[in-house]
Length: 170
Ligand SMILES: [Zn+2]
Image 1 (cartoon, helix red, strand yellow):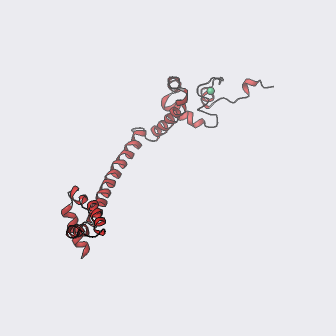
Image 2: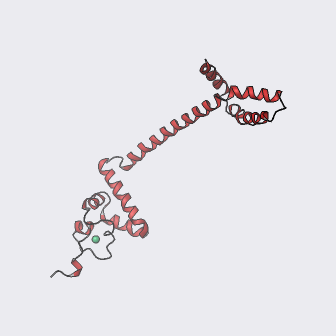
Image 3: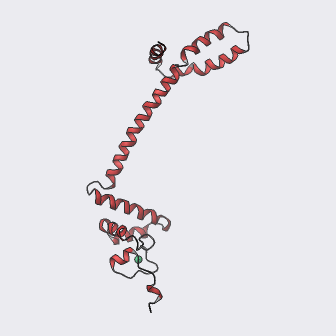
């Protein structure tokens, strides 16, 4: 008859290190026996004793994240022995910079297009509202012109927008 202490199969770490997996084993929650490769990779890159030390230094609720990070780093190091996960991070960072530049350029285009289309009618409306002070309708035109008028002036793209507007209307 097997005793109760052997009914639980040892974690991947203890199985690999050929030692008895005790109930308080620090590896067992994060290296289940079903994932032997996870421990093998982490052990190969960092070493079991270093992982043991690191897990003891980390708060219990942060240990799972720490192991995930170690597994990711170890896998990346095996794939890319020179740069490891730094290679992936720098590729992603350069993508972020490139996309940020594209976003800035697109937003600048949007501002240019938004300010170029209403600027010719708003100047006309502004002139009209100055001329006729009688009707209540002129007040609403005034509000519109106040909204549209400052935007081309605040951005110093006035010359460009007018050129584009001229070409667009023809
Ligand atoms: Zn264990």
